[in-house]
Length: 379
Picture 1 (spheres, helix red, strand yellow):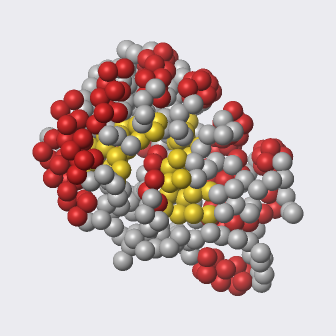
Picture 2 (picture 1 turned 30 degrees about the vertical axis):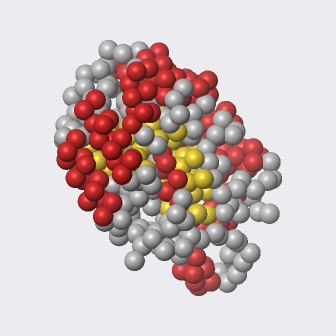
Picture 3 (picture 1 turned 90 degrees about the vertical axis):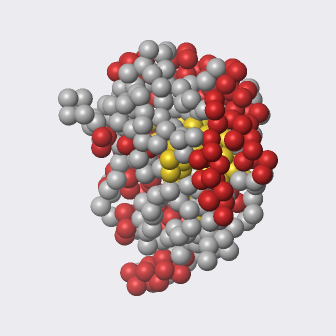
């Protein structure tokens, strides 16, 4: 077999990206010459998405809903609540019930439920738990992934009793980041305790680590990884900070993609049996190409919104490919909750990839196996 770096250079869609050859060799050596297994590519339908390799289903199978609309008290330096703006608002329990009924009627399989935080980094769901329970009783197959923020033991239990399928929270490992970026008077221990309370429940727990959260620089990520390793949730999602909304007086730099790749490898080695996924958020352009390539090579289990060419790269590295229109936090190992009905709504356009490659160099993809999903859920 050729080296992974050679395989990477054969993907024309990635020709503008540059990888660290020593890091790629380290990743290949870490794999030990064995196949890394399946890689799931997720295309959350609250965001328009298409590449030459895969295309999204027109239906909003996994909408994102905010109980505060676009409002958030924290106004963190990396976000400024902008991430909430495109979400469906549901500012009252009755409105949430109406939104869910509309979305189920339109074919939705589940939703991401979130909202802006108060000044203690808590999303105030108290009035909504009864409605969430009603939704789960009325639509038991409808999946709900909840952004929890920080929780107490009692709040974690209330979330569990409401029927939440997957609980998500950011794990921050540096006090400076909590204080300066999040504007919070909370501690790293508060984040660890919240994760501990969630993991003690029956919910699937999928924490997030935001790489480069301290103004684009790495600071507490490895400590956050150690926190996750101590509590072993269901899966881990990694995202890379996108500094589009940073204030001019406190600018972010774009995180170094090679440093991101090195963290991917450390995470994979530290959590060998835990599903690790690359979430939606990461810088665009060349940085995304490099980050996504490293994610595939490091052995991450899934990527949301892969860069063009990354599906082909995964195939060249002999990884089985599967695609589903779901929030990646719903993924649990090889079982993707969104695929319980086996209707992914997406296809890997292998024929197009093959045709393009044959035009460039006949036979270069011969023998590469890609597993495709039936698009029965999208008409």
